[in-house]
Image 1 (cartoon, rainbow, N blue to C red):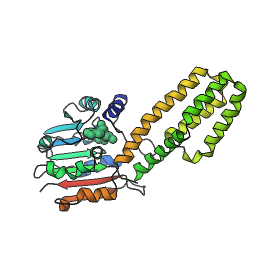
Image 2 (tube, helix red, strand yellow):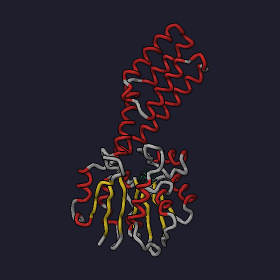
Image 3 (tube, rainbow, N blue to C red):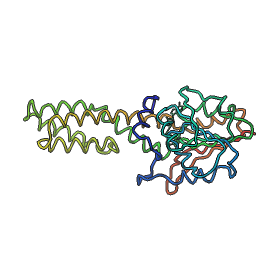
Image 4 (cartoon, rainbow, N blue to C red):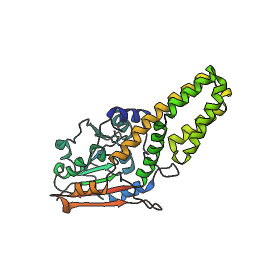
Length: 297
Ligand SMILES: C[S@@+](CC[C@H](N)C(=O)[O-])C[C@H]1O[C@@H](n2cnc3c(N)ncnc32)[C@H](O)[C@@H]1O
């Protein structure tokens, strides 16, 4: 999502969203939880931790009973931070609307973590992380992987929505729906043509675009069972919803880090201290994330 307003809207609508990325079964991906329980330092009771782009506090909830001396969530969305305060009452929050991270704050922490978050501030923010850390501190992040498992799924969703926009599916649907009252004889033909055009593109539809195609088929074929005004409202509402989802999905694809982004991030003065590997889920061929770690010696 491009803007802070979009994120506020997202967190407003999903205040308790702990599960941003689900498996094919719609359930939370336990591998992420295992990743964090395996990779957090053993002794944390005396440590301070900051979660960059924390959202509603999914990570601190995954950390569960693990004790920290201080827990802080940083995000650009005030709604996300309000949820975090409810979900994790012992955490403090930092609202950071700037495009850069606040070095004077990060330098205080022993552990800096991020889960599908810091990449929204750009690859440069990750590259600069070592300059913002105190000696002995660690950075651990899972970041979106370009052409990986999550990326491919969202890219396909994005292409489906782009196809609907390109063929002016909503505009045309509204015009055809108008014929129901203005010219019912022409309506039948136009609706049939419209639906058969959508059918020729069947391989494009998935997720949101597929729901639209199935829904409009149902409405156009059984239009006599619906109020005309309901049909129009459904089409307009769906268009608006898909525009929001499109921005959300595009942002995920845009911020995903490519292999050359990783080279750029780890190149330079601190190159020896970065450890970066693809993170794979069981039974999936494509990596689901980059596992990025840095220890400031
Ligand atoms: C995909 S969500 C991940 C949230 C959380 N880490 C989780 O695992 O549930 C991305 C988060 O990045 C935040 N974000 C996006 N751009 C940001 C920025 N420039 N500065 C701080 N946070 C940002 C959003 O508000 C959102 O909460």
